[in-house]
Length: 144
Image (cartoon, rainbow, N blue to C red; front, side, top):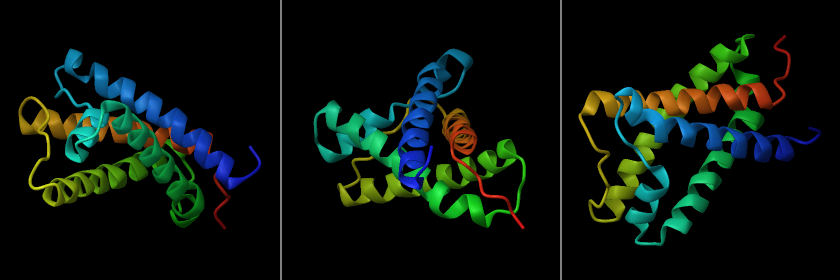
């Protein structure tokens, strides 16, 4: 992959697909059911197709933030560890963003099914997997 834009697009789409699969199978392993496209479309009062488009656009934006900023700022050689750290950061940002969006939408933040701990575990697992996939797909500059 030559350009950072291409890396962002490919990494964002691939990582969002993998993260979405993880979140869909999460209830099968005892974690909370989470459906980000449904949550986004519900808050926006839009059809589910808009939620899916937004879900992938957000994934591409997060991947771009890794490609353009994060990968060169964190002095970690291991792609797995760098992806884990990035995933935890974006999980926190995603939770904050959803809370803000819900507040703007009049408190219409849809709640995932189940208890808080399994929900947090699913949120972290999905975003950590996202971060690892992005870290492996995107070219990481050598840290001096």
